[in-house]
Length: 216
Ligand code: URA
Image 1 (cartoon, rainbow, N blue to C red):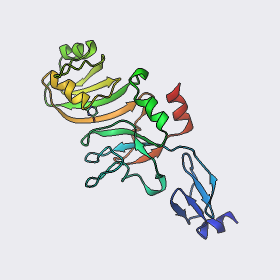
Image 2: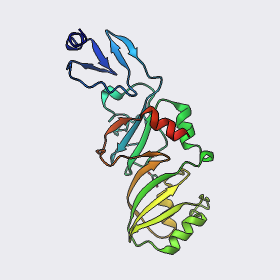
Image 3: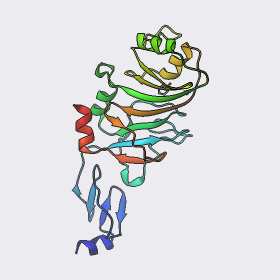
Image 4: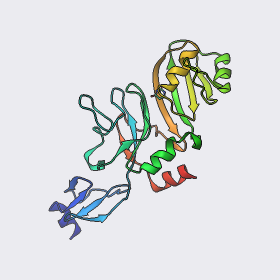
């Protein structure tokens, strides 16, 4: 019976009609429709994307492809927006949601949620730099940054955790010690960790457990 209904195209997940009865219903975060009626509904969507290089972190743009444009159709709905901003050339973990309050909690500086990046620099890192980051970098325009944890992974590769999100913050922080950032990839925000097996541009729904852990 259910198989026949699926076969007849009566079941939709998000915007996509499912016709294959062997389809595995992993409906975490998705709305399911039967004959146009919602039978399973999520108030909000929470998506984790591995943001590719060259895609704009915005909801819409006249000329450039945005992160919203590359969300698969079946995971899309109105009101989705990226949480915080990554530069166009930055890759990695991006949360996209239509839950504005949640987005606010993620980026509020008072929450001091750690955001960790892997940065590849155009020069060598030193212990002195690590110390400076720990004490709090003062940017060229005199903006003070909160203490940041800099781990030297390789001569020119750093793992950096910051708890704020100032404009181009990491590039500007490294700028103060005379280093340019060649590559920047975000690997975590609080308890959200970019899975190793995610492909560039891939999107996954965050589970209720992921969200509960994050909010603890
Ligand atoms: N800091 C930057 O400079 N760029 C980003 O995309 C994120 C943090």
